[in-house]
Amino acid sequence: MKPCAPIVLFTYNRPKHTQQTLQALSLNTLAKHSDLVIYQDAPKPQATQQQLDSIKEVRAYLQSFQIQNTHHKYFKSLTLIERPHNFGLADSITDGVSALMEQYGRAIILEDDIVTSRVFLAYMNESLERYKDTPKVWSISAWSYPINPQGLGDCYFSRIASCWGWASWADRWQYFHRDTQWILDNFTQADINYINLDGTAGYFQQLLANHKGKLKTWAIFNYLLAYKHKALTLHPTISYIQQIGFDGSGEHCGPGGEIYNAANINTKFPITYPSQITESALAFERIKAFELSLKKPLPTRALNKILKISRHLKDKLSNTNRGG
Image (cartoon, rainbow, N blue to C red; front, side, top):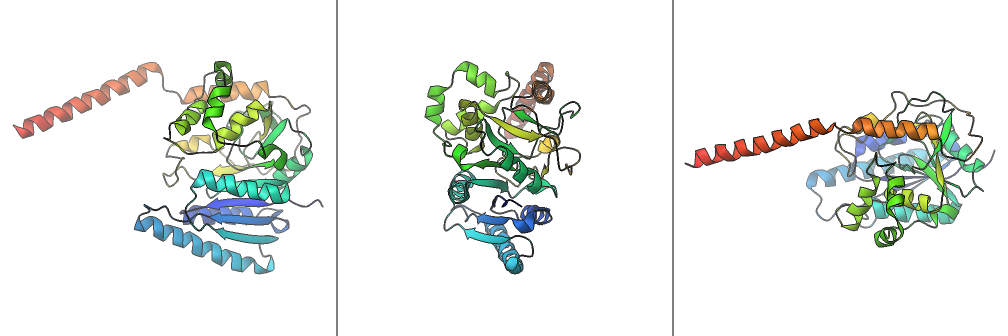
């Protein structure tokens, strides 16, 4: 059996999510053959007492879990790295992934709100091995848009580089950077249209928000750089993960995002891989249709705007009357 790729997990202040993520991961068929590195971020300077308590709870749970794994109960090894100061998710992932890539040459990456299938690691490791010498494959994703799987096989290639359970190699990660000005200088309108799935999605807006300092993320850069290297990402037709962070507890995933999860988590493995490394036109059209389905029709948007203005005027009038 070939050595398994190391897993890196990033945690912060969500004890329940962290427990669910670790419990599911530990049940994977290849867990005991895998090295796990966990990064626990330190509190932000402005953290509330509730947040501080949650961070302490996560840290205590991770320390206990590490002790339980002393005799390889769950994983081949478990390394817990407690940040001395707050990195924030984007910097923590950039730093942590780079460290593992330098040491191992490949890595499987998770955040604390990703519940995995029992065959998640099997799919990831097999895919990493299969495409290790194929630079056109930028990364491996465990997630897929919840589109109709009919006619797509077990997995497909897409331009989109996902961050909900993913893996890559050092020779591809070496090109990663978060220089927003470089991207703005090197992307044409045609490039932006490609990134935005022919105008059906708003991915490039994330880059602009990062450039303006309104957002600090990392995944959009990975997607943009994959495109610049003419590379694709492998996606399963049905996701091997469930995203459990759509409860308002995280920084970038708010309520309502459950629609991006598949009805049932994928448990199929082994699988059949695509015969060619080309983007699936069928999957692409279905992804665009899915994105369009999320957009409210223009009359609905206009009505919502009118209602919002109406409520504002009503409140203003009410306040004026009370003042008189």
